Length: 227
Image (cartoon, rainbow, N blue to C red):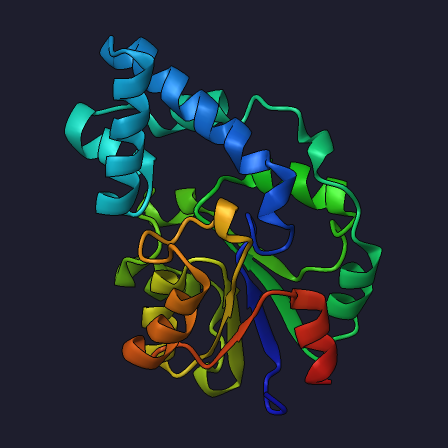
């Protein structure tokens, strides 16, 4: 990765450890929103949340397509959470800041969520740009069109760009574009990749998929190792 000058980071469960439980809070409110809007039981709502997440890339996309849900109403609702579980990571902050080149956030969340998370991480001043889901008409990763929209905004050189992401399927298109791809794995208990159930699955996926350049379970250590 010595020629990389554009560093693209997913936000949730990538810049902070999934074990903090922030996304668990979001999932609870996603389910509650579905309960209220579609008049479902708690169990039915959570099952639908998971189904749409895996089918459409985000629960929101499924709700928009299947139930014509207003995206901003949904996003405002599910992000009414306490962000205090996200704590400052000054070592990772300094490591990212010291990388040569530009740094970007590329997320399926909205700007308000990004700002709150970065503030808690003390990283609000180290990124050169952010692309949130509203900029693609709420079409999420891994759809090809969202990567095209990202490129239209920032016009990065594909051969000098690397992306860091906790959901490996979101790395398929960047790899096809010529980006370096780094899969940031999490504790299995908090893993959101539907095809990862045990540690052995990680190596199997790397071998079979062919679109993962590197893998790490510690982003700070990985970034320091390639300096």
